[in-house]
Structure formats: C-alpha cells, structure tokens
Length: 451
Image 1 (spheres, rainbow, N blue to C red):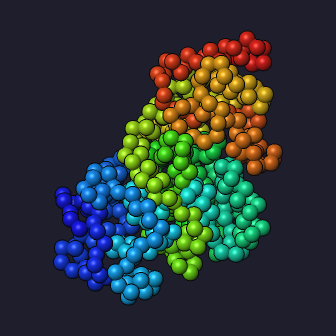
Image 2 (cartoon, one colour):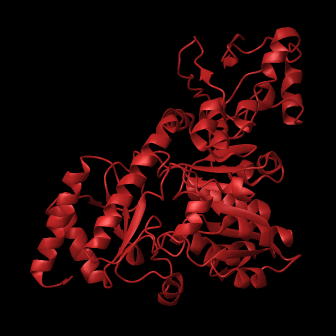
Image 3 (cartoon, helix red, strand yellow):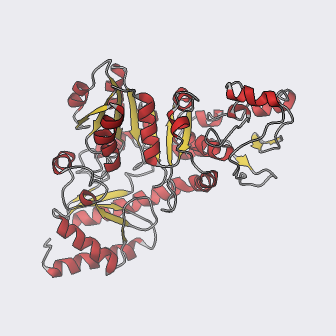
C-alpha cells in the first residue's frame, strides 16, 4: 500500500490477517465506509464531493480500478472466521463476497455519503430496492408509516398494497404541507417512519423538511426522505432528515442507461442493514454491480454542473410558458406555494429543480401536445424517468402515477392532463424554445387548445 498527498492507492492484498502494523496500519485506518474528515467539513454538495477521498487505480491510474470479483480470497484460514464473526471487515480492507461489500461499490457509497452529508451510504441495484430495504429495516410486522399522499407511483403501491399484504405494515397518507395533519397521524410508540419526497413526484410540492423533522423527532419517529428530484438542490440530512434515498438512475446517472439506488444515513443504520442475521440489504440482496458503480463514480463529479444547467433551463422555460398563459408548475416561479420555502432551505446557486409541470387539464390535450413536441418539432421524447440530457415528457396520471386510483390522484393533486417535463440541456435554449412554440402553435391551429 502506498499513500501520496493524503490519497490512498489500491494495493495488493496483505499476506496475512495480522499484518496491520506500522505505516500499513495508518493507511488502512483511512479505508472506512464513513466520509473522511474533509467531507465532514460540509459546505455545499460540490465542496463535499471534492473533499471526499480520491481512489486511485491499482497501478496508479487516475481512475480507480474495477473490482469485478464476486468472491475474495484470504491468505490464512483463521482470517475467514474472523471476517464472518465481524472482527475484520471492509473498514480494514477485508472483503468476503460482493453481495456483502465490494470495494468499487463502497467507493461510490462514500461519494454518495459526501453528496448528502451523511455518515454513511450504501448503493443498491435500484431506487425501489433502496426504498423497500430501508422501510423493512425500520419497520417490523405491525409497524406503521406516515407518508405523503403525493409519491412516486411505485412507492405508493409498495405502501398501499404490498406491505400490508406481505409484511403487516400499514401506512397513513397525509397532506405533507398540512403539519397539523402530519402531527395527528403520527402515533407515538406505534409509528416508525415519516416518509416523504423532498420535491414530490409529480406535483413538485416542496416539503418543509426542518419542520417535518421536528414534528417526527418530537415523537421518536425516523424521517426518511426521497431526494431523487433534487440532488444538489436540497440536502435533507442537513435540514434534519435521518435517511436520504435516491434513485441514482435519474439525475445522478444522467444518461438514462443505468438502474441504481442509494441509502444515505447514519452508520448505525447502514451497518444494521448489512447485518448477517437481520440486515435487509444483506438478506434481500439488492446488490449493485461493480461495473455500474464505477460508471456512476465517474459521473458524480460533474453532477453539480449538470444540475445547474437542468435548473437554469427549467426556470427559463417555466417563465416563458407562464408568459404565454399556460398553467405551469415550477418551484422557481414566485406564485408557486413553496417558492419562498425552497429559497430558504435550498442550496444556493443550484436553482429550483430540473423538472416542471404543465397542466393541460385533460389527457387528450396532454397527449396531443406531447405528440407534437416529439414527432413534429423534436423538442423532446415521450418517456418516463428524468435527469436525461434530452427533454423527457409523460402524462403522469396515466404513467408514473397510474398505480393511484382516481380518488388518490385527486387527493395528490394530479390532474388527468398533468404533463411532467424533465428539462434536459442538449441544444441551445433558443433552439429548444422555438421547437416548443412551434408545437404549441400547431396545437392551437388544431382547435383542441385555445390559449
């Protein structure tokens, strides 16, 4: 092992389990699942990422090596027993099997912990696996969750249908902006988790994380926040949340080519989720592939630059759409109900998010507009997901929120014609806006939509 300027190079496996003295021991002490001291001095997400330890390649390459092995060898028989007993682990560079820990995935996990300002993190095979694993770790049979009634459809289905049937875990859904309702729904001694999205899917409601965390913590309840819609923009753990979740597939990946998730939170929680006997991550096995982890670790350093452009263009388009008289929902607009809240809790210089919504009132109008935007002017693609460099559009009620019934959609504020738009950054702003105007003009000419 060799260290230079405070960085740690990947080295060859030690010859024995007890070979940890001298300079080797000092260097190995740095290899931890937790953020480094530089990360602990958290200023903003970009500064925290820059302060996280850089992992070099096996032969000194500027990029880390990919540890593609499923299993790892030991030099002495006694070492394996010590690893399975928990005496030796990844914090001291001992690895057993990649479903447990993998060095490449562990590096991405450290980056995610730095991004969110948490003690630790663990990266998973999907966003839904991160969500389900955390809730199963925090809730036992008979457990209770209080959740926002405006959630991603898959999460809503998990809480509404799967958990009650398979796990005897029930959920009370609330208006997350009605703090009295939230407080009344939390039953001290029974409720385990308060769950919500920092910026709701698809209505872009911004949660008052400091106040909601205070309400939950006063009753001993763990606060879990899905921050998929607002990486860099909002830092929930810095505002009081206990656990922060991500579908890394979205903005963090940025390429619409990877499915992945992350759990960011206290080291005690992450360690409990990796327990050999009771750990939800360990036993359910939503393992991230090391090659995927490497890809993502190369994209995180420029996430801040990408998010600023996503947000800048979203603000530009939303402002122009509003001037045209369209019913647009975007937290950056002054008439958004939580505009001032996001200004006060958001990280400065990162804007107000990379998504906006257009309420076309009916599904027919929404579909007609999206058809023109994709097939006649090439403004974007009709596709679910978000965070891509192209504009992505979907009618939420019949797609990503289709798991909700009509009453649930109405309570969540999802109209039949709500178009969710993930704003990309390809092309020039003038070029893309011209494409939008051309599609809108064609729709107006059709007589279906009048401004």
